[in-house]
Length: 425
Ligand SMILES: [Ca+2]
Ligand SMILES: [Ca+2]
Ligand SMILES: [Ca+2]
Ligand SMILES: [Ca+2]
Image 1 (cartoon, rainbow, N blue to C red):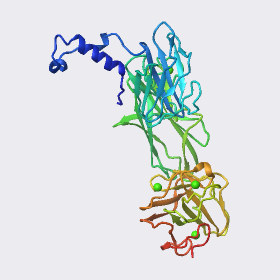
Image 2: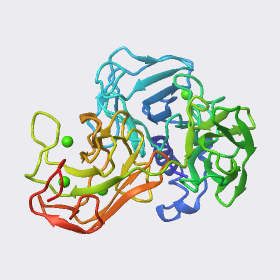
Image 3: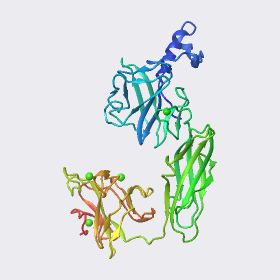
């Protein structure tokens, strides 16, 4: 479990050390016990807490005031790792026994900070007007719809909850959180059982974990998942020989309190899916790659020239091929890495260049990975994840490409004069 840093604890420790100093030498302090829960809470602003943090999708920090008086936090500052701290507006109060949400959305105005939070986890620190640390909480990796908070409000018990309670009490919103879902096989063939494993955290009050699945829009069926090792495990049954279509699924975790969480978090509106498909794979080929460009062939984005990595795909068939929903990846174990948007086609006998620049905002041909100059793999995958074609490559020289000697062929060579979008020659 990921811990947290509490300034209050440090102050409690100082107070404890002072009050017991007459009894204990410094050497013996570690042997003297004290129930710090009986010590009054002392903070730079007593009774003010960072109560809940959301850091994936919507980023925000919820403050909680456990006292019966409004707390004026004029001059307070908030920061995350590595960013300049942000001063909250004057005249802002956290209401008595109430909540205030600070939006970490990088808009730098009012209750909207100049930074975003990392979904991988970091530390959020709140300082008072004198610059003293009022609260500091280190949160772990969070997924959409999950939060890290105090359950109940203002306590020292932190947990990842599978549901959030932005601006309201955490007390009824403590749900088990589903952190990981694994599907085996990742690319199911027709008429195959599919195993789903779910990893959970914050399970003290766990009641049930269920897998829901729906084939081709039928009503969802459910199956209880059984804990095997670290995972809650169950099976989506095979659909029969020759049956093709789309399987949607999601996992639900319910607490004994009735609080429920899902993965994906907004299921059933959203769900995971796989395709049972027996289409013949298209005649497409990874045909030429550039893994280290400094002067060759700038990308198709206007403005300043960008010399990005690229992948050329060749259509060896006599028909136009629609690549909508197919995938490119630089990891052959992760076929679903970068989805090709709708409307991308290659004419019969034609070539198309995809940019491996992690700049998806530059258009439909820009993939969310780059190619390693020291070598790796490129794969083209069908809409169901089956591999159409792939190529492993070793270390590459700057501005020289690696491609099939004959378009679509299996013998590859280095090209001093790359031919992105045209026949290799
Ligand atoms: Ca809350
Ligand atoms: Ca680019
Ligand atoms: Ca890469
Ligand atoms: Ca070429």
